[in-house]
Image (cartoon, rainbow, N blue to C red; front, side):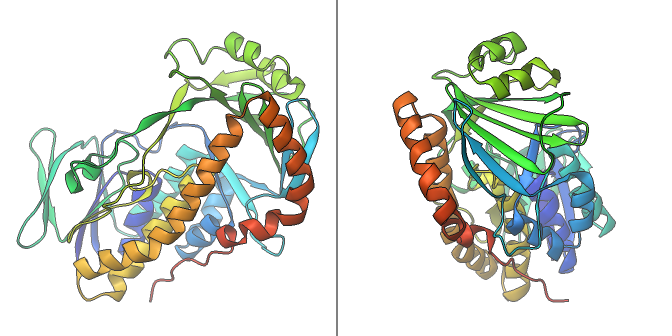
Length: 380
C-alpha cells in the first residue's frame, strides 16, 4: 500500500510512523521548510497519549524531550487553591503526564518516522486532491504531483482537504480567546506541577521546566489580537496585575511568543471518502489539553484499521466508527473548559466554590474514560 500524508506535524508524523509499522510505503508532504522548528508553545501529553506513543516505540524519546508532571493545581483569581489532583492520569497509572515544546515533540515523531523509512518532503504546499479509479492524486504548488492508494490529511485546523471532502464543511471561527506564551526565569514554582489560574481576564497556565517557567495566558477578548499589540508584556502585565502569581511570572519573562487567536470548528460531519481521510485538528480541533494526544491516537487507530480491513474504503469506515464517539466526548469537555475560562466574576466565584467541593471527590471518576483509554495495537 502506498500512502501520502499531508502535514508533518504531530498527527502527520504519527500517521507516517504507524503506517510504516504496517508496511505501507509512505511519503509525508509538509508545507513549511522546517515543520519541527520552534512552532507554537508547549503542549502536554496525558496518559492516553503516552500509551499511544509507547505503542509506537517513541515513549522514551518523548520523555527525554520534556518534563514529567505529577500534579495539577487549580487556583482562583484571588490566589486560593481550588483543587490539587493527579495531572492527566488516574491515580493508579504508572505513566506521568509529559509537557514539552511542540517543536521537540514533532522532531521526535518525525525522527522516528524517518528512521522507520518514511520519506519527508518539506516546502511542499498542497494545491488539490482528486480521487482516481485506482487511488488518489495530490498536486502541489509548482506543479509537482504524486499518486497513492490512500491520502491521510493531517493539515491542521485550516485544512485544505477538509473542504475537498465536503465543500460545505465548517471553517474555523474565532473562539473569543487568544493565547500568548512565554518563558520566565524565577524561583518559587514547584517542579512537577501544572498550575491553572482562573484569572479575571482569562486562564493562566504555568509549570516549571528545569531552570525555566513555561507559561501561557488564554486571554478573553471579543476580537482577535493585533499581531504587534496583544503579545506585548506591558499589556499582559496590565491584564493580570490583580493576580499575584501570574503577574510575577509575566514580570520575570525572558522570551515571548506572538499572540495567537484561538479558533473553534463546528462538528465536522465528513472525515473520509473511499481513499481520503482527515485526522487530528483537520477533523476535530479538541483543545482541552488533548489536541496532541488525540492526533497521536488518530494516527495509530488509522493504521490499525488499515491493517485489519481488506479494503481501504472499509478501513476508513471502520476508523470513523471507532474514533467518532470518543472524539465527541472530548469535544464536549473542551467546550466546557472554554466556558469556564471565559466566565465572568460572579460565575467564576461560583465555579471555584463548586470545584473545591466536587473536584477532590469526583474528578478521577469523571475523567477515567479519557485517561484509561487503551490505544490500538498493531499486529507484528
